[in-house]
Structure formats: C-alpha cells, structure tokens
Image (cartoon, rainbow, N blue to C red; front, side, top):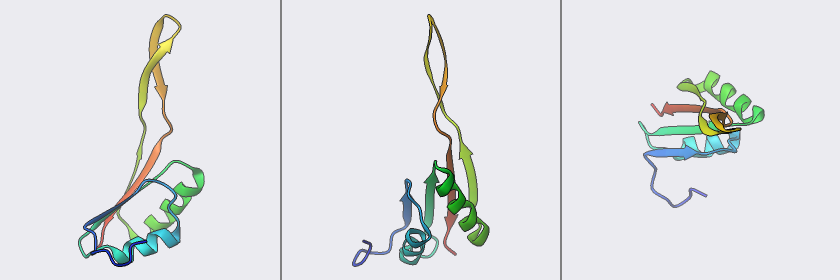
Length: 90
C-alpha cells in the first residue's frame, strides 16, 4: 500500500496493528520519522507490548470519560482505554 509514495515523516496506525503492518510501515518510514500506533483490544495491546520490548519507544495508556446522565444528575461514563506506542526511527 505504501509502494511508490515518498518516505513519510510520520505514520499513525489507528488500530489493527500486526507485525506485518509494523514491518511495512517501519521500512517505509524515513530516518528520524515517528511511528504512533494505538490499540484497544487485548490482542493488539499484546502486539504493542511485544514490539515495544523489541524496539523501545514510549508506551502510554490513555483513559477518557465523558459526562453522561445518571438519573437526574450527571456522572462520568468511561470510554475504552487506549494503549499508545510511539517511537522515532533512528
């Protein structure tokens, strides 16, 4: 999918990361480019953890909640947490 395109400065993977997707993206990324990948499932989190162990970078877990009705009052309704991995190609 990246063939024929100039080498990107940054690649963002919103979900569905696999080793094959990572390897293709990493090969296409220019030196000092940034790769950012997100995961919400246990399987994709496991993939991020394994790749982080091999390649380093920053691993972050983000939790967000939105205000929502709770009867006549308002409370926080959590969204699914997102694991985010980012690294720079050196």
